[in-house]
Length: 257
Ligand SMILES: [Fe+2]
Ligand SMILES: [Fe+2]
Image (cartoon, rainbow, N blue to C red; front, side, top):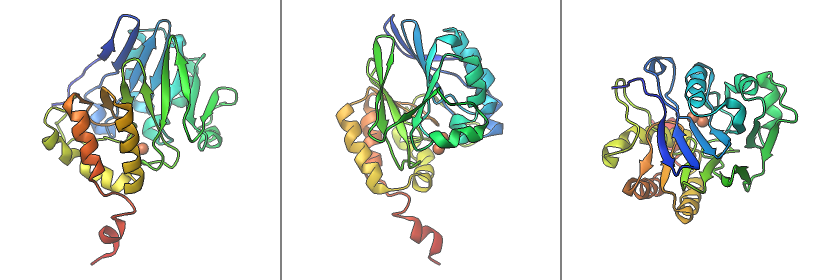
């Protein structure tokens, strides 16, 4: 059952906090459900995957319960999809000191959102970069072709949480929703169709899994669906490693009788 929920803490050591930013029941009828996350360190913050137009008021309300939006130093975007970026105009106004971080591939496309983004945009190079938030660092981790050709996850070093963009996305059937994956085997069926069709390449996926194993995250928090923690982090990586996606399966699915 989808219910109204405000933010939920994923990590808190007093100085450094990570929050999931809530959900409202009506969102289910408007479009695919999305997750937004806030990282706070001291007096600075980063908003990860700020989201589209219809979630803006909910995200702003839940951010404002913890900080003044003027404390947002970075708006970090994994890629250019509307469910990630369509609220950019609003965030530019409500978080006037924030700079945005997005793959350098997408920087020249942003003016088409009718924003004056010059001087406020940081194009993330293909190999990634680090963002300083208070006394902590958030690392942009390459996830190209998964699914966007210029795609990043964001790894919060202090909490060990990896915000994985659309990797790990699940689409729930009507009326079903949960924040944390509990039964991985049950959860698989909500992820498989999405990954096979939206992810571009099995090779890219396996390269990402190898890299993420080295990072050894405490949680993997996707932009859609539920969060992986404890033994489900490893189960999720194993599952991805054995999945065939995108250009490696398309021919059979589209053209064979
Ligand atoms: Fe996407
Ligand atoms: Fe998405």
